[in-house]
Amino acid sequence: MAGLLPVDEALRRLLDDVTALPAEEIAIGDAAGHVLANAVEARRTQPPFPASAMDGYAVRAADTVDQSTALTVIGQSIAGQRFDGAVGAGEAVRIFTGAPVPEGADAVLLQEDAEPDEDGLTIRASEAVTPGRHVRAAGLDFRVGDILLAKGRALDAAALSLAAAGNHPLLSVVRTPLVAILATGSELLPPGSEPGPDQIIASNGYGVAALARDAGARVLDLGIAPDDRGVLAERVRDAISAGADVIVTLGGASVGDHDLVREVLTGEGMALEFWKIAMRPGKPLMFGRLAETRVLGLPGNPVSSLVCAHLFLKPLLAKLGGRPHVADIREAVLGEAMKANDHRQDYVRAAATLEDGRLVARPFAVQDSSMLTTLAHANALIIREPNVAASEAGDACRVLMLR
Ligand SMILES: Nc1nc2c(c(=O)[nH]1)N[C@H]1C(S)=C(S)[C@@H](COP(=O)(O)OP(=O)(O)OC[C@H]3O[C@@H](n4cnc5c(N)ncnc54)[C@H](O)[C@@H]3O)O[C@H]1N2
Ligand code: MOO
Image (cartoon, rainbow, N blue to C red; front, side):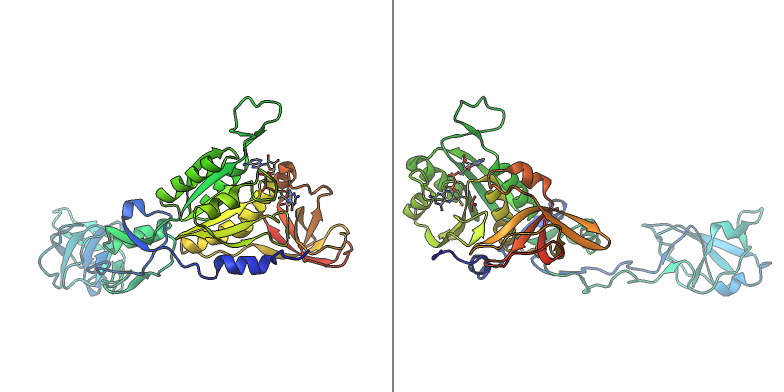
């Protein structure tokens, strides 16, 4: 059929000019899960001094070789309060984990390997220590000016602790994309309602919101709009004034008399980039721009909505948020024969299992795009290229893993 854009071309047009959103500074305590907009440099050296790794005595290693030598304990060094003098021959300083090792000492004798004399003023080593033992050199972890974390790093537990150790109270992160989700359709009611005989429970938004959050976005739920031009336009304006980076509409994307989404958005100033792609499910997918806001019109059929969100919304949000996105596409073999395909690229719900080291994908018999049960049971989508010939069981195929 003429006029349907190939999936790859649609993805290219959607993603080509997308760059990460501008940076913002946030408190390190709020930064978990965010993406660094800049590299993080160490603002200090860690440890800032040679530090003891153990509780014991700072000594000269040479003094522990002859274990009959009594070492005079001349003071103590504790974390946060160093011993101010130097350790000379025949001397030791009581020391605790994390405390600065005093001048003159080159090793720490473990407490367990030191025998205090009765007077409590001297100790004897019961084990010899080698120079450097139990001493962390200054800068062992990092030095001032070192790059601790690269731009683009997602702030996980270790990254956050490292940035804090580098003395950063604020971090520059990519602003989190805000996606506004609007369900459309006069037949729709939220879950928990008592629907009339012709009504349907609005389901798509929940799955799409979950995928958006997975991709690192914040979600603004704009609820359900009836098929009414005025209400739709009002909700679109709400999304814009809330600062949405992406508006996702659900339903109303096709050609029916009540499919108003494209018309209303165009009326609000949207430049249409594409509408209708060579994909099954998901043919009526629409993409446009409303000033700085990108608009993705997902088809109403529940499976079409979610499959399009996997393929188009997730990479868009990842790119806006400065995150990598790689679709989990794997080589597999068909567990059953499949018919020749037409001009649309198919994403066929399937069960993929590892059998004798091979991934075997078995397509489900019924693929109606209204059926969420089959999507929930599928762990993969078999990707059938347009116009591909019939295939036999055992033929190679590609699958997009869903979970
Ligand atoms: N004459 C044609 N008819 C249709 C075509 C076509 O090319 N020519 N395309 C078909 C395809 S393919 C799809 S996909 C659907 C999608 O159309 P819409 O995006 O306009 O979706 P609606 O008509 O609004 O709804 C379809 C279906 O999905 C239900 N729905 C909608 N929103 C939700 C929601 N948030 N949660 C759960 N279910 C939802 C709605 O009640 C309908 O049953 O068009 C075909 N028609
Ligand atoms: O392309 Mo539609 O998405 O078949 O249901």
